[in-house]
Length: 162
Image (cartoon, rainbow, N blue to C red; front, side, top):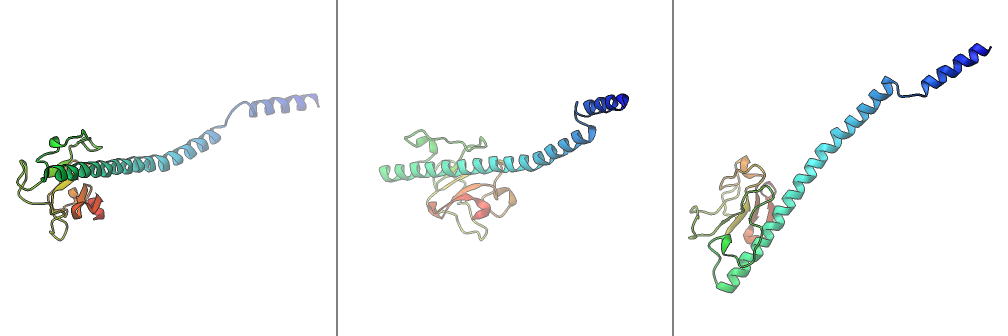
């Protein structure tokens, strides 16, 4: 009988001393599943935060441009003409695009929506978005991620939502 008790004690001691391979495998699978769910959600939230920062940046620039227009009875020829220092690059590191008819760098036409109607009648202000590419009309897919100002400031958001 003494041997049986001693053998059981040894077996119990060995069983409590660590994890089995199956337990470790289950833990790794659970951690992997959590990571597979959490990482894309985190990256999506990070992208949304950058979009929100671009919307806020365009709103601030619009306010500065409109204030300049009220003070000088004209819009600035470029963002460098603004009196207050504001962030002139979007969250992806690209400069905000500002175009006004007749100003240096004007491409000859306003940006247009999918129906080829100009987005604004006063000036265009937009971010070219995370891909760093854009086209004048919003029809091509490369323009869908742009953060735009439309309806003379009535809409500021992602081009695909306009």
